[in-house]
Structures are given as C-alpha cells and as structure tokens.
Length: 92
Image (tube, rainbow, N blue to C red; front, side, top):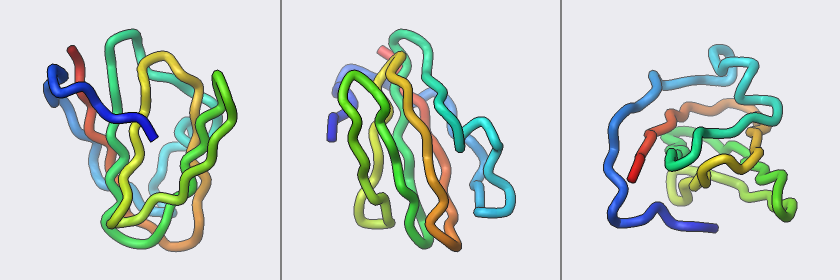
C-alpha cells in the first residue's frame, strides 16, 4: 500500500458513509484528479479496496488499516457487510 506524501495537505473530507448510504460511484471504477490523494478511513466493519491499475490489488480495510488512493489511478470499493467510513482528500 502506498503512502500519502508528507508534503500533501488535507483539504476536504466526505461525510461518513454506511452500507446504506455509500454513493454508487464509489462502487465502480473511478479516479481522483492529478495531484489529489485519498485516505479511506473505516470506523466500523470492513471494506474491500480494489486498485485496478497499473496492477490489480485488493486490500481489506478496517479501523486498523486505512486505504491510500493515488492520484489518477482507477479504483473501487466493495462492501463487506456493515460498514462506516469516510474519505479524506489531500493535495500537494
């Protein structure tokens, strides 16, 4: 799993999502803009994070393990039952 550069600063955070409120767009391939990183923070349950390029990778996220979204890389999340999470965005 990649790390958010230390030079990046937080600028926005989504509301908390649950399995009932997660936007459909997060469940299919999407990407952030150039220079924008995301940190997926799970506060309850588990969430499967899939990186679709340049190499396929799956990471099971939980309150102990967050996900890092790299700029412009296609990714998606898969619900694993009951979950609460939000995404924090960073830019350089």
